[in-house]
Length: 228
Length: 170
Ligand SMILES: Nc1ncnc2c1ncn2[C@@H]1O[C@H](COP(=O)(O)OP(=O)(O)OP(=O)(O)O)[C@@H](O)[C@H]1O
Ligand SMILES: [Mg+2]
Figure 1 (cartoon, rainbow over the protein chains, first blue to last red):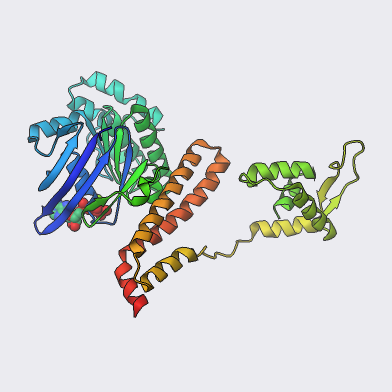
Figure 2 (figure 1 turned 60 degrees about the vertical axis):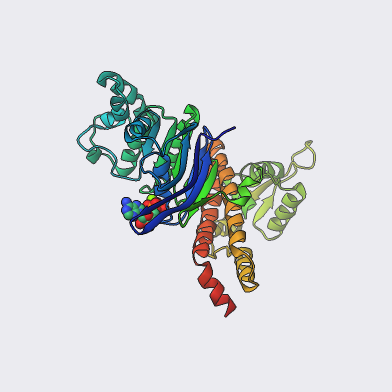
């Protein structure tokens, strides 16, 4: 079986800083893959290359049989909007919008009409234990609540791939566990592939597999190749 | 002490003690009957439990055990006293790393393999805490936090490996 996502030998330098120095990885459809590694090792940069947000200096990124590092910006932005979902560590909700409007955003950007988008957004609130908070703005939500709203936004359009960069980074353990339960539970239910950047081992333990990024290089550990 | 605690809950037969023990604390390793009665015998000898009269007609297990004042007091103080916060020093991990460095072997490779093994176990425990009863989840969490602590140590050691190698060889 061919991988859904494959990165081959990516390099990327910001000015003088080499962020990626030959990073390769694969992820299968429906797989939850954790990217771990020290701060500054290139995890976020790698994630952004996989998601078509950044273009590597060299190397290839394949998604579902298509090469995305050579696509033009319009094609990539289309892919990000229709096929990918995103959750980041913080500062993601649009403060002027209500929670339900925030959740509905990917649908609105995808061309769904407002009433339909909000109707699809609403059931997420009960599911995330946020009933009654549909109309609140992000300033009126706790960090953990806002993070769950962001998670709903990442998943509402049923993306093929969810890219999550430290989605529990700002949360306490219990709230972090809840967010991970929801993230992994929903992804498995929807068959969504998840690329999850985290430095927390307990968060990585929700994944099917982990890849360690060190000094801009990604490696699959020897022990993983042994069948469980 | 666990059996004493279960007797503080209610006077019980040996068989019931074993059943409750196995359910909550056995972790797949049932307590042998012999050990239950040996412990109860010892507690009785020390005046911490009393043995009731055998109830007629029901075979050998029909004695009820009751906790005494002494037993209850001892249990109470055990229950509230913090255990010594000894870190469970993973001396094997530590020893392997130091020896590998001393002998100029590949400590990194060992640490990577250990890291992968730890994470694999953490995945199993995560699955258990997601699917199992709450009491199992509680124990799985305890294991997860400890493994996570090991993993943090492994990562820190990995990051400092060159400096440690120098310190060990000089
Ligand atoms: N936009 C940028 N401009 C310049 N340098 C950058 C930029 N983004 C990242 N870098 C550098 O690239 C390297 C990799 O950064 P990256 O954000 O991918 O690390 P990371 O593994 O995600 O770290 P963290 O765990 O701290 O989030 C770092 O040295 C960082 O300083
Ligand atoms: Mg990062």
